[in-house]
Amino acid sequence: MIFKDYYKILGLDTNRVSKEQIKTAYREQAKRYHPDVNIGNRNSEERFKDINEAYRILADTSTKRKYDRIWTRNVTTKRSSYSNNAKNDFFTMLFGIIPEDNIIKKQNKVPCKGENLETEVKIKLSEAYNGTTKSVSLRSVNGNVKILKIEIPAGIKNNDKIRIIGQGKPGSYGGKNGDLYIRVKILDDKNLRLIGNDLKTYINILPWEAVLGTKIKIKSINEEILVHIPSGTNSGQVITIENKGYRYKDGNRGNLILEVRIEIPKDSTEREKQLYGELKKISKINVRKS
Image 1 (cartoon, rainbow, N blue to C red):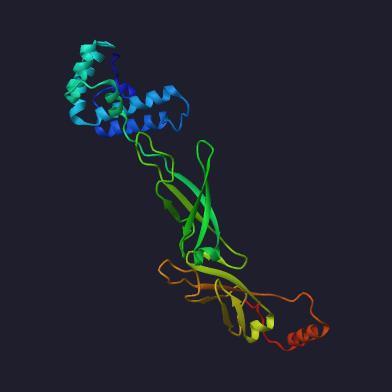
Image 2: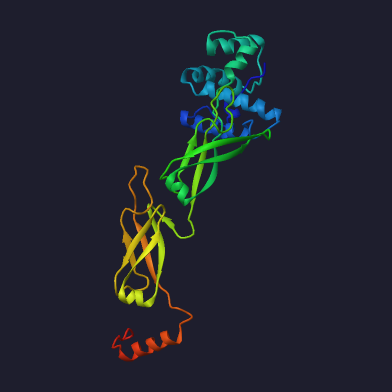
């Protein structure tokens, strides 16, 4: 039987390494030669088995110490193989038994969890506020398509992830499947923009409404709200209405933020222009005074 240099298999040059170094080397090699990354490559599959076998022996202090005796004898004396008796001695020293080949192979297969997957689903602002159900399509390595129905809770935050256990890539050698992570992207609607747990919108008023004040009905995310615009309101002024914004998962709500924009009519009548002219004559206001 050919002597297996477990340190070389893991990419290590010496046996003077810590457990953490062995674990790091194992992860690098396992990732490189994983069957999911090298589909159909028989050599990579065999290499992956050797990597798992090497880690199982070297990660345990007791078996590593016993293996190091054999490693030193073979590596330092540059011997690459040993007899069938040496083969039996090798496994007897490590395990206290001489196993059959099929038992050895079974023991060498270390369970490995499958890779996690991540995807994104886009939902409307109203769907995020009220909660919704979405379908997500997953395509497997062999081309099959699986449809999953995802329950999205009310009050989910933008870019939150939903974890679906066991819906990632399959595990190997009896390992668990990976998980699926779904990132939720909340889209702003036509009039409302989500900022944290607050909702922001714009409200347009006319010049005389800004001067005299007025009351305007606006549509929030789930209701109509009567908003009082005080006299003397300027363009760009912000009005905050508490507890009328986006909802938290516990049912509480953020604020509704209104930014006022004064809109100048483009098609004023002659009478309206006349009144503006009269206002210009009698007004003592100078907004450009330094």
